[in-house]
Image (cartoon, rainbow, N blue to C red; front, top):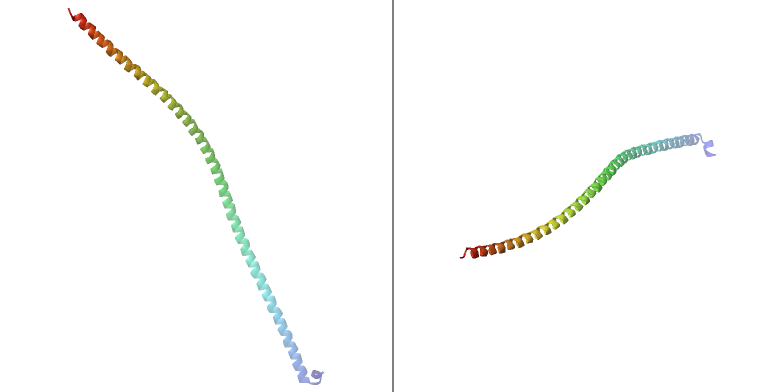
Length: 140
């Protein structure tokens, strides 16, 4: 070859080979550094997301606990409402019964008032008859 015949050219070929080899090694080193940097970035991102997920799970557990407590409270309130509804129903029946008694008593009072009125008229008539009889007896 030409480089074998010319020592300067041969030295230039060797130098070029070494420079190219060194550049390839530098590229491999850069590629390896980029790879590790990318891997570390991914690992950090995965860790951040895992931490965020753990926090969300913790918050979710707290919310679940709160929901359970609220469900128990709602259940207790439902039982109280049911009990109060029964009391209201019972009181409504008592009020209805009392209303019927009041109505009956009102009718009795009305009837008694009519009897009193009638008896008052009879007394007034008898009083007039007595007055008439007294006037007749007083006459000579």
